[in-house]
Image (cartoon, helix red, strand yellow):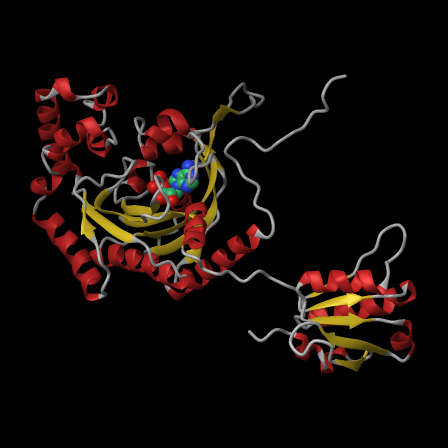
Length: 435
Ligand code: AMP
């Protein structure tokens, strides 16, 4: 006999189930409040885009585009044309595409945020998945250093609201394209002079993306990379002033940071400020949030030139860190559990529950099986297990008298009172948990 087919989730893609999903909802609610406090507005773009958006936007020779995208050719239309599509590996390019397509910047800059799944075919491990979730903030149409600083402060605000304490901030300035070209030439010359010490990855990147060699994790190349020409020495007056202005705001706000000249980020589109929030508490995948300025991306994908700056954080990693730090997230429990000893009471009970729910009371109704609703004892066991503060008992006597018994299950356990079924509005609030 053949084994029954058991279909599982795709490798590296996770189901998010209760009670874990409550932690996601809590985090998302904190984020929405934080975004509103900074006047960022929500955007939702498709999960799938034309592959070209990413090859043009992120750069052909980035890891993501070279090996990690889920790309496919769509079915042909009646003219024999088929689109090349990709699941989004990140969402800055999508947001920028949407802003350009809808001329969102016609009346000035926009502060936007998004939340949602991203897809990268990476080797799954702790903190690294193939479907993962990002929350991102993007400020489009603003060129000044105060907006770079505002975005960094927004992330720091979020950590504080979430109760995350173990983070540090690294900053760098990638300058402007002409400054980078000067540095790139110096870098290629330096690595060419030390060809023998390059690993295979570095040799491959030497002429295509030498900046990424600085990002190497290979211990054998650390000394070589340490001694490489620094971009910071190739920056002109304006870039230095921009970088200094960002640092001044952070310093005035008591945000500690370290300048890391080797911080280059994985994508091609950044210029001037780049930054990462890192934690030591998550092992190898310690980058919580990364971002920077990308003044040339909008133009690169065919929009009207406009400066921009943004970041994205990894939701799975932030949630993992919350656990590591012991941050307690409230698990939602119903305010009340409806015990219905006799099936004859069901219609009346459900009428009452509807009225309570409409007034914001969270009520879990007892539900039975084929054999009926079950004994009082088993219903009370369920009521206890639900975590509810009150049991609502719709017994035959009560219902006949037009009433329901409200019994405290936790604070003052056992205390009970009869309430009128006709008028739930008068007592609904007494069931709600104190906020
Ligand atoms: P990036 O777009 O690569 O700068 O990533 C921004 C953030 O998303 C990172 O700092 C991580 O927190 C998170 N992230 C990136 N890739 C993954 C992944 N494969 N799995 C989980 N989180 C990720």
